[in-house]
Image (tube, rainbow, N blue to C red):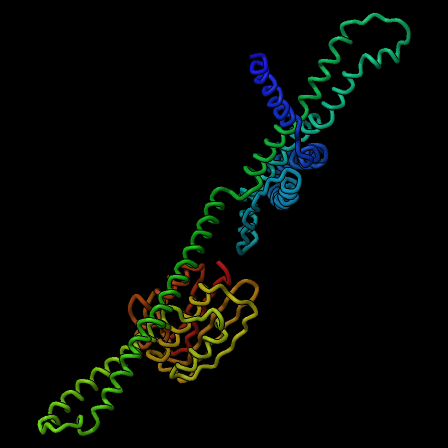
Length: 443
């Protein structure tokens, strides 16, 4: 009974040790951030205060707003080293915000800087980091030093005042108080590190709307990739399954037609030639229909997934230009390989525009140029036809860029907009017609 009674107590002692170790355990990065972060916090906080103070003083002068705009540009750049410190020392990965938009015109750019939420949030982070940096340094350095001094206070007294001396209340209070300070330092450092992590996530990362846009872009990229894979699988099934069976059927019908011969099948029955002629006509019609079905099926599979992953635009576009009845001068500058979804959009756009040139423009020659570099893809299609294309969808009478109906230029613009692309049309009456599509190389 005694051993069973003592067992829980020993188990409790063994369970208490890990709890104390967890309380005293602090990551080295937390200590480093609390110690080394004080100079960074002081410099950043003083800079933020100076920017606000000077901005308020100069707000009524001509140089006030330009000064604030330049200061905010500098403050925005300070967010990168702050994120680096939080990542390296605290282990908190903070995604960088979106780049600052650069509209045309000095006034528009100044307005964009002054209303930039990222810069103002970084400024607020620098202000809040000042007291947190002081508290972190106090918790990581001053608390251990103070606790150690209090624990050794009776020894310091004996060294400073040698000889017999009665123990007073300062010696009795100093040691427990020092132990309390030493024990509270790790918890304080951990708590302040958690505050700094949450503060960095809230103020140094993307704005909530930008984060949502980025999430939607990633989701859209995933959906496009998934749909591309499904279409590729459908193309493979049609090519390897249905189309192969139709080809086999066409071969069988051809063999049957050859077996019938020009005078019908051999046999003693004198009435066989009339039946054989009718049978031969049916077989010939079935073979023609099968050939037409195979041709349509090939066009369908080519439309589902026109650009092969191996060849890309460099192989697909010359073949497309060769099938156009109008002579096409093709120029390719493909320094970067776009994503498959972008390649399909470019190919589809080029195919539609060349088809419209052949059907509606009356052009004698055309030009197709594609350039992929620096993260952008630019497709240019030009013809010397009648012109008069209507960018609003379809073509004006005699226009050369798109056929009438909703699947013309408006349909191309919608398809490009789905991958962040734009379509620009320049088609004066009498021509020439120039259509330019601009897309990113990656979603």
